[in-house]
Image 1 (cartoon, protein in one colour):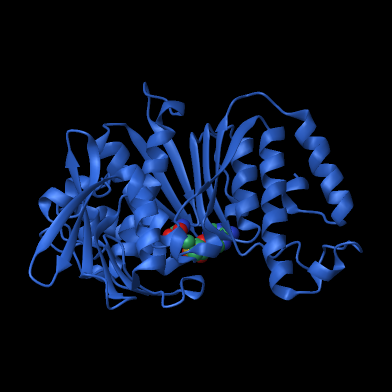
Image 2 (image 1 turned 180 degrees about the vertical axis):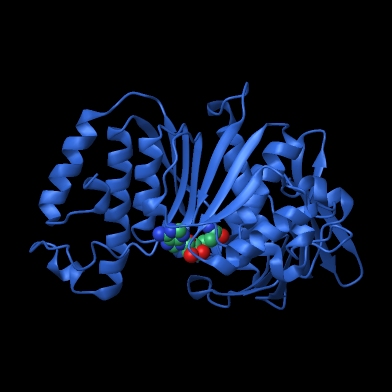
Length: 376
Ligand SMILES: C[S@@+](CC[C@H](N)C(=O)[O-])C[C@H]1O[C@@H](n2cnc3c(N)ncnc32)[C@H](O)[C@@H]1O
């Protein structure tokens, strides 16, 4: 990632705790370092910059809209090194030559104070407040503090819940909401969904997690039992062969290759109102794709793989539209899982899009491929 994008991300996501500019470019510069931290004033979010002179410290307040450009200017003209402390990670930017800046990422070492906590990103499940399933799964300690090594997972869980919060309007409020998590794995996100919908929002839910792995399912059922999560159960099974009739929401996160297609096909069959799907390992079309004009791209393994993922997901989007879903592709997690960070968010509008069907067919013909999602 480029250092400017990193700074932009940190400011935009409001995860900054401290930013320290050091290693000055010119000896003549009167201050040796600048420490920047966010604070709230009556005008909203602001940033305080502390300039460290030899014998004094001076302060300047910057508006949120000014701080990015001020920082870039300081890096380009005054300082060669930046240390950024965020709730998710620490970063060191070595920018002797800004155009060739190097970024080193490490586990976060700074925790926001209570006051800073209110400024930095507000998570649906906050760090510092005991949450039963996170404690049981080892993400938090008994005092509710998130363990450093699990901060990425903690952030992913919260991001997932933010996305779930945004689709609540599409779920029924007057009856039990039925949800299936296909390829649930160790089910951090399934437990999170239960916790949020049932315990935080007061929904009646019936949630099933499905996975091929018997040992994982045994573990998840034991955890659900220990937590008295009575309307959450886990079953061993294959997504492609799973039969049910009523499901309001289908979740499938990182279910590999065509498992995602079978999950989407099931969701369509059951007329699920909401689908949240993060595809991964899109291999199916890799060896099928064939197009002379694009052969320079297809000859490069990495490009072929990346393009294969994009093409596969495009078919999924088009078919969902054809089946009457409004679809958006959104970023799920930004840094840790870069290759697997796109979520297909689909809500059932009931309006089938026949143009999408024709577009999918034309695309399949052009690339000479037969994606699973188009066989059903
Ligand atoms: C990478 S893990 C993801 C776990 C979890 N959804 C998450 O995002 O943290 C993928 C899981 O999907 C399961 N899986 C893959 N294909 C499946 C299938 N056809 N039916 C059921 N589960 C499947 C795997 O066993 C594995 O546990």
